[in-house]
Image 1: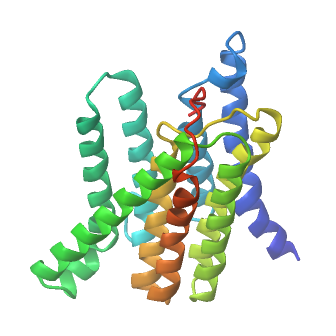
Image 2 (image 1 turned 90 degrees about the vertical axis):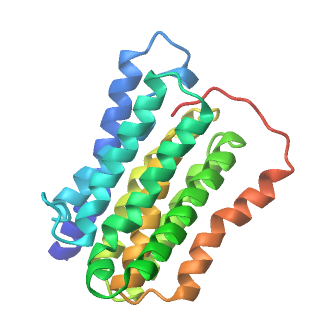
Length: 260
């Protein structure tokens, strides 16, 4: 029982407290603004705060990175920095997409560098990096499109369910640590689900999905190449957001204030 309590504290309580505290601070700093526009920088920053604190508590952070999982918090921080930079600097959409594509190409290159160096030839490694980078970038685009058409409770709930399902799949693939990392992601995004109960117009469009996507895609990659996550389960998890997007593609677009 003490071990279970300790695990829950690391994977649920710490991320929730970190994300919730940062969101509360942003709320207070901009309390004179309408509730739906408070702290536009806060959502991606709150998400990465929960991720980094939870991963640090599990010992999944190290500098320099020695294992694939050590790259996950660093890439989440890079994604957050990129999103905040985009908010502060006016740039054309092609430039923003180009930088995000580079970031998602760096994801498989960083996580799979031991395989690229020792197991694959240069051509095979290049093909894997390009294919997985494009897949991760496409996942982020799908999430962003869904976020632009969503507000309130529905999308955070779907993200929590997807992260929780990934956590279960990773545990069953033989890696308790990867399952716990996915649980941290579920807990961190779950804060927004709770927040949406009080502010139904909450929207996650505008960068938060980039941080979420790079973390989720990274966990799937590590689970597939270093644990026993099967290709079938990985494909099902990857296609789940596409089903959500297709279900909303024909719905009218509702322009709402963006929280993050």
